[in-house]
Image 1: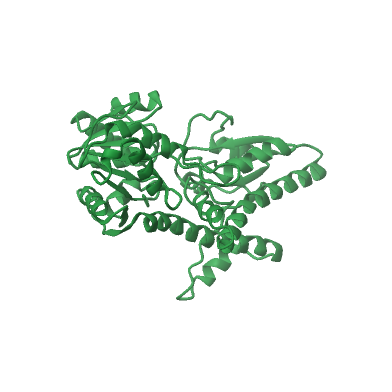
Image 2: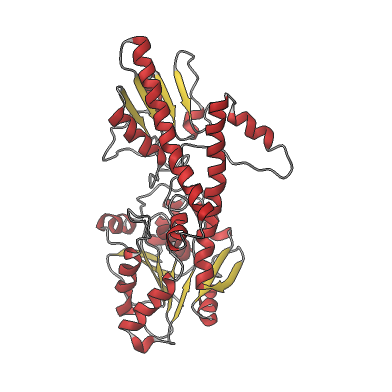
Length: 400
């Protein structure tokens, strides 16, 4: 195969398209946002990811990558669009369905169709049914598979190439065809399985991480009650050769770990008791943090007879990125603004503007604040000299 189409040019779609283009494929990137299309075609990027701008620039300049607003004929099609959840925590696969529908007219015998979007079990088979319903002549004539990404934002380009991948087709022939594509640029091992197992594997990986983080977050709440430094406790406990407790935070964010476990819980509610409890614990941690800040504000007013200046330090869902999806820090900042009697300063050094928050520089915010709320452990924050006269609520280990 020579020409491939990526539907969705977000945090995973654009880096993957750029890497594929860098390794010789002629890549067409599809996005419904005209600003994204224009940006990519200028050889620029609309997301923060180390080294991505250079890779995209080179791919566009060599003619291996260009962006359009709708698909066109190719040899392979990749669906890399969001799968959020609805208010009942059920997966919303309408983006996957819409992306699939958009490529159906362009499919031809011998083509490869791959879903990378995190999806509930059996989504790939449902999309296969949708394709064959509209194009029955393609049954048995095209290859359909699922291959989830497993990258760390901030290190995406390296991990796209070096991480192992799990690839599951609706039949062995589809698995082999997908392996053929990824083997062109993935140096990690390519593990063959079926589509259902590949879908569940992605959900399992993130549910496992969610459960591990929930343990650390619950431990931090217990330690607060007991008057114990949780950071010191975890460091000491991890001296045990078979213990590896993660670091607590103000919750869990991002489009994967904060979302994917619900796909299992809603489809298997009676069986997924532990997974559900972990997800609820991490959601609760954000409210617990917000309530701690509200209490600190009330106590400040009682002691000083005036409202405090509160600095909310960080909005991203993890350090040193610009991704705010499902961010507990963003939720906490919103609650503080709406419920706290205070002058609230919001800081996120990795973005310039936000539609809902007026942003303040991190140095100015720290200098002006009476109460400093550490929500994200950005590297820039670690460089700030501590001022003893401030109240600091550290939910992410900046001051550990």
